[in-house]
Length: 342
Image (cartoon, one colour):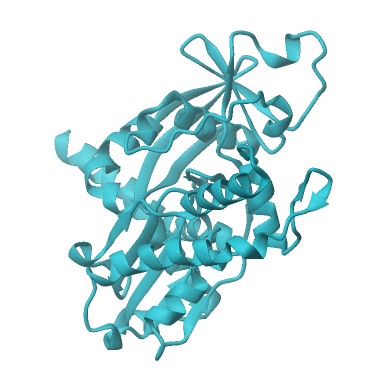
């Protein structure tokens, strides 16, 4: 039987999802993890201009999410960066927004991700919350029949193995996967494809900490608070200085602070792992990889740091592959259980 499998990774910075699958071709897309609430459906409000967003109804409010969510923005950017993130209406709005953009009326298996440190405590509750019928607005709904939550870097490990043709050989190897995200710096130690739980963890030292530190430095320089986090992020990714008071601001002056925060995150990880010489693969993924690469190389000077194409979507691509590889087992297990109880 052909099952519909899809994957979503609702991160603190970006929501990544699989938009289409054709044979071995997995297409991914993403949008900012920002959800703006309003009392009324946005498209019915005066002055509304059509934009690439969807309005998800939850608990009497409409949460606008999507690629052009910045056009719905007010002066306050609400972000939910805490350990109960997956329990918030904003998280569910982002998840349902991704489901709406997939344009699949029913999904047999939806694979979602969690930070390594949250996996044990949050896995069962998140899978339960994801299964069922999801209202995506305008009288439309999407049914999710089964859900699977896995550690975010575990998806990246699968993606790496597929990209490099190592699905067979990696079973005999030890790997370290590093995933700097917006809020957390995650790492996962694996033997083959199996997670080594007591050496894998997360710390709350991610890209957002770097952006905040740089914004504080800029504010100090210009003599007024500076809060345009998105402009800093864009500047760091493109190498083009942000324009402040009509002049380019030399953001390279703040890079020592960025490097210091990356070093702190990596140092926290080094206390958890030992015998780094035993790793055949050290893989750096995630949207923040470019900010942490130097600190990681300093920590592992004798290793080659491996990367994947399009590191932002590595986790969600790996989720998709893992889901497609396991969907038959998941549904056959359900059938066997039903037969056993009959």
